[in-house]
Image 1 (cartoon, one colour):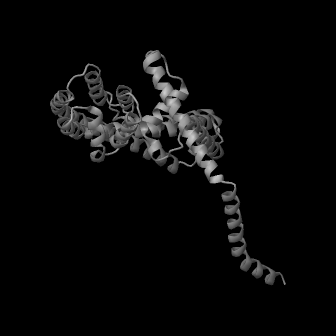
Image 2 (cartoon, one colour):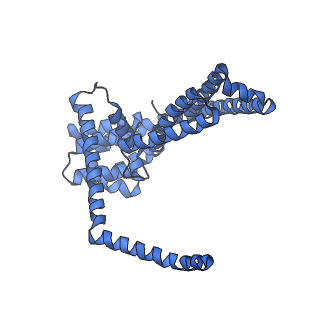
Image 3 (cartoon, helix red, strand yellow):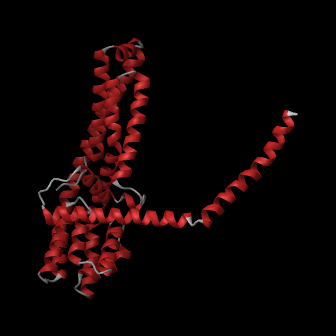
Length: 321
């Protein structure tokens, strides 16, 4: 009898599931839940954009020496990483929540494995910073991409400035020929200007999106040209000439960075291999590391050292020149 009931239940399970899903979707549609969600998301994004604008206004026009608070720093990091191009709902609040969740999970895993409170705390701190470090890596990656595309970016702008010596015209028409992340930045600039925004302010916003001094220097020159009604074509020509010598130095730096990265990576691999080898050859060492204060300190130190080394490997190419 029970087997018969079980078979009937299995047969009815799929139609029942489909019926419940249909009724749920009908319920949501009748009450226009999707429109409310869409409206809420749009308001959420508008509030974020307003906050970013307020942060930048405060940074550049209220006090340039004013120190950013933690939340403002995260918002600017999100902006520079261009992560919202892939995850539109990413804000500092979402980032903090994800960081806390990751910190709790990692600390619990380490504590349950090692029964080491100190190691759990250190791993929690490391785990909390992993999402922010990931955004820094993306921001550095964007800076490198911009650095690689600078020459072609200037060439395209120069070609359009030959048609009309207007930087807004040049950026708007150059957009289809640009690569990411410059393409997204150019789209944002064009939308701002086309909807009545000040071109100078739009250039200021464009300048702040990338941690690349060469790019910032170029945009600053375009701003001065806009302010004093100079010729954009001349500014772009001079910028193109200065980039030729810069590219030679950049290539030398790339080679030096690669050598440094390989050295650090080799040292990290040797350290991990020696540690794993020591533990595998001497099982008693695991008990010493887990049950003695000196062993726990060694574990914590190695976790922190390896984490810092990986962080330097990921951020060594930061373009700060």
